[in-house]
Amino acid sequence: MSQFHEDLKHKMDEFAHFSYKITRSFPKDELYGITSQLRRAALSVILNYIEGYARKRDKVYKNFLEISYGSLKEAKYLLHFSFKENYYPVEDYKKAIRLAEDIGGMLWGILRKI
Image 1 (cartoon, rainbow, N blue to C red):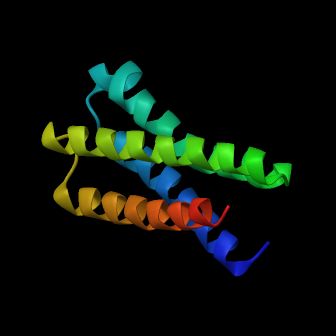
Image 2 (image 1 turned 45 degrees about the vertical axis):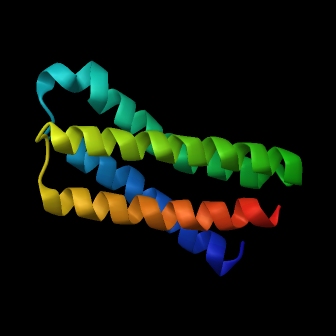
Image 3 (image 1 turned 90 degrees about the vertical axis):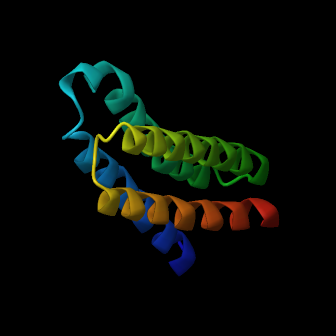
């Protein structure tokens, strides 16, 4: 695996863990709502990337990358919505969005090459 892919995977892992950290402070009545949805979307980013990478065929890999990218967009919206609802502080919002934007740029770069 190339250094680029290792770096991307590392960022995705950090994003998933950070999303879990953020959601620990969400209101308890959101446990089965936004908390669950954000956690699933954040995990879907890395899980679909890993599964696609393992498939070794460009069309299949591209499909999984597109799913990963879609999950990232979903997570970004949920992060934005949750921030607007004052569920977590601005510093965490900035970090989460910065990570998401880095990941999005890297994913988009791979998708353009395939």
